[in-house]
Image (cartoon, rainbow, N blue to C red; front, side, top):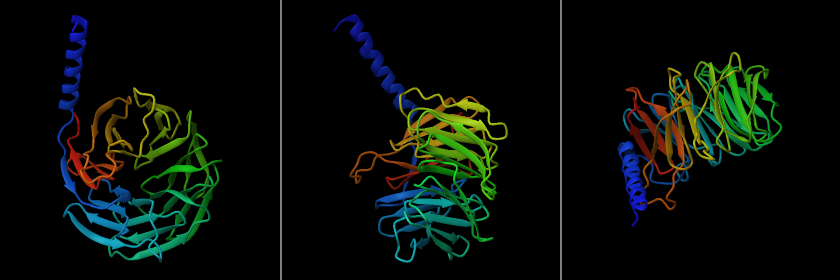
Length: 322
């Protein structure tokens, strides 16, 4: 081997060892042994709602590591493709292709079930029980069960892929195949801000107070904006051609963004400048028919750690990077 070849080989080994050292060993809990369609962690990771293939919907109390409720979506127990939990832990919701359901977490009782005018695509839920449903026809439904009011937002011209709500249910964020990200008032349908990305928008997120908005497209463009002025705060420093996100959430202090991908990745980003602070891969399981795993949801725990739940059925916890 030539001197240059040997140097390259040694450098490659050193880089591999460094990457291995940077991946801490997570604390792993196996909760679900069967395939799942979607899952949602509550802020601070007290609850987990999972849509499974056989038991349909399972609500887990993660403080006790115990199953709290099991629900069926709809009258015939339809397949729930999306789930949501309110930040105040009062409500849970699920979405199938043709309906949406809402439950009271305090007593486990259903609060409503509604048919959809078009195929359901994505779901979000506010502290007052307001439901936000993105549809494949380009519309978004804002449904308040307390006042029995429905707002249908028609700002998108193509399928809506992701929606987000502020904790108080006042502000909605939506992104779709028309490459647009729109911030609007959930109780009136009035647009407030609009941004354009280079390709179709796959993921959006809002801080709990709606002061910051995040969106990412199908390539490697991911931005964070100040919602009051519409100006860009930062762009995630993604150093490859594509990086798609299956979930995204701001931490409570609005300083950090947590993301998950369909390719087993959990990443931690600094909001101020978009710099990646950490990047890990969730655990493969021997029983998995496919070696990959979709990261369904990420959250910050009560003691400041990072937790994720993936299609591998594993709940994994890592330390927050310095």
